[in-house]
Length: 391
Ligand SMILES: Nc1ncnc2c1ncn2[C@@H]1O[C@H](COP(=O)(O)OP(=O)(O)OP(=O)(O)O)[C@@H](O)[C@H]1O
Ligand SMILES: Nc1nc2c(ncn2[C@@H]2O[C@H](COP(=O)(O)O)[C@@H](O)[C@H]2O)c(=O)[nH]1
Image (cartoon, rainbow, N blue to C red; front, side, top):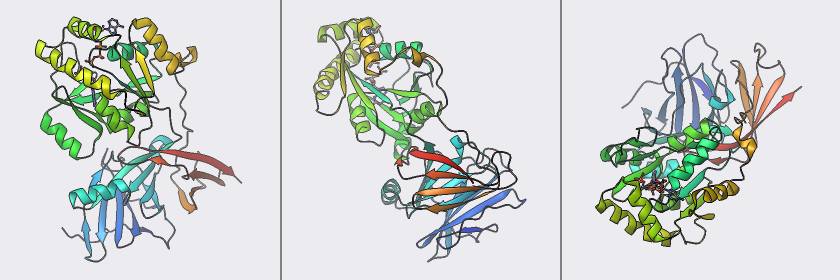
């Protein structure tokens, strides 16, 4: 599919400093040249909630291609500026957006993009939202079916509603009575879930007791976006996958006081057929063995008497009365001004603010330090720091 070169072009190449598009037009676009390719990042304010659009020009063939785009996409705002960081990614700053929504990385040749390009044999790019700081580590809770993971998590979230948020998994199993779609699980069809797995939407997934279960990247990010600490209730296979993923978490395994007690709890819950109970008990034996794998779990918690187990869980998570108060937003509030330009020195991006903005004095510069980045597509890019220079 070939196309004409877009009309509104503002170059941003290695030799040409980035230029913020100040036209009255509602369409805007930046171009970034990396090797044999030109990446066009464009958007329009006039179409509400439209994602920013990416096209790639292959300089050798002279054709524009539409790449396969991974990751949650930024919604087009009042324009953006962009700067090439290295040969792997481009920083995109959305104008007039709060810090939380303004910093994005367009990954064009990171290991994740390379892997997807090879797998799909197509042009691939990926979006990753940039976050100031690291946030608190998510908590992975595993343990055999019926041991009481859900009960403990419910207690934690009831006592500390503003501290914790639950990662709502996807599953192909049928909902139980009183289970609500989007609250307990995202109940989904197998075909749809397999397609989403192919599209790299899942941080981890596993076949558990005959059904597919998985944690979408979006489920985890929705919790951290709400400023809360994420809790994942997943099986041991899932815990293994998360362990080797970029998500740095605390891993807790919940054990029953005895196998007999586990069976009693599972039966007393009354949610499974006899056949399903047998399957879950069989898998429980395997999970209790696998949980002993060195380095997999950070903490083992025996759920004998519920209240004392809960107190032990809180000790692991170092919770006190202060955690009951609503958490303060950790992000510095910073609006990327409408009129600005950006430049880069080593791992620091300098945002030079314009003179007609209320949010910053004429000589204000913001420094975005990218030297300690972590993560990246298919999740968020963390570890940015933002500081101000008033001269
Ligand atoms: N310490 C405990 N003592 C007695 N019963 C308990 C205890 N903890 C939980 N239970 C009960 O055991 C049953 C199973 O608990 P729960 O549903 O929380 O398990 P789970 O680990 O989340 O299971 P699944 O993995 O299948 O979702 C529930 O009926 C719950 O009320
Ligand atoms: N690997 C994953 N395991 C998950 C996920 N969500 C839940 N689970 C585990 O499945 C079993 C059964 O749950 P149930 O609700 O059917 O009783 C349990 O061990 C959960 O921890 C997931 O996203 N990934």
